[in-house]
Length: 465
Ligand code: GLY
Ligand code: MN
Ligand code: MN
Image (cartoon, rainbow, N blue to C red; front, side, top):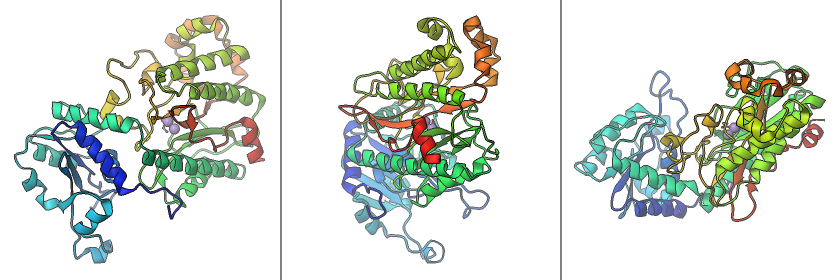
């Protein structure tokens, strides 16, 4: 833990590989780290991040490497060091050194991969992110392998591997929990830096820089593209060109990943001046209530959809208490009132990926027999499983005034006069508020890994004063 970050011992990776091998029933899993993607010439590549399945089992991002997991132990295939490394990269470990460092049974040269696997019919694999690696896997496995998130799995060996990976990655081991906590903690500090920087910042970019600087100074990358915007109603507003104007709320959805690649995902919304207006404060407290009530649902055996429905109910109850909506809460929910103001799911799985294992489509997020709702808003619920101890999820309700939704008769029509536009107009200084925490399901109370990131309005105001 020299740099303040927990380090996963090689034994934990060995245990994960053993657990996977045990689920493969005699088959072998061939998983790729993936290939760096060049911007224009090969040496000028986009930052390389190994596939999460590979990181989970090996613990190091080795460009171009493959790991073969089977009952008799695992083999890593990697490029051996080369004389020219001295010029360009500095010395790299020999394959023997790599074997000792990673505690993996065998390490062999990448060049031997094809000969080693030729003719094997027991190989299962998963879609890599890049097409170059997909072509290599297709040749090695002797069948079509598609690249990209959600690529359809057509081979039953690959389906079985996907199910096995999901089974072991759904509930995090102790080493994974330590990584998630560390990522959450550092990202919480980063948000506090963003709150402090806001008063003297002229634009979104300056606040984004203050937040990500805290991650960079810990050697952390972003777990996803930071959202720092005064237009919180645009859910994926990735530009940071906006100016900060007194009266605006600033929505910041930023999370770093630990040195071993584990994600954090935090959203906080704060006023540019450091003080919420009365209308902003009223809506903020509605969203905070939804956040708290949904977090309380993160308990073993509870369906995550319950957390989603709980957040929706809290939003509608809150809007009824403010007079924006009128009538019976069940009826309003039935008529889609929550989806008008909170048109996304309450969160998702969190792990090595910020939306953990969404490269496998809905296979990880949806329990067998459960499927996405067809309803507007609810169709963006990314997780519908019963929670188990060790599962990490986000809880991220929000309130948004999306002009396109509020003008859509199909969505607001069913609310009729029970949506009071006159009262809603008084809340025009609230475009979007989201409050997002990272929560671990335990045998007892939910563990809010992002608890150190201020979220009560008074706390935020005191910090920014
Ligand atoms: N930051 C992406 C999300 O909240 O899902
Ligand atoms: Mn999230
Ligand atoms: Mn987020």
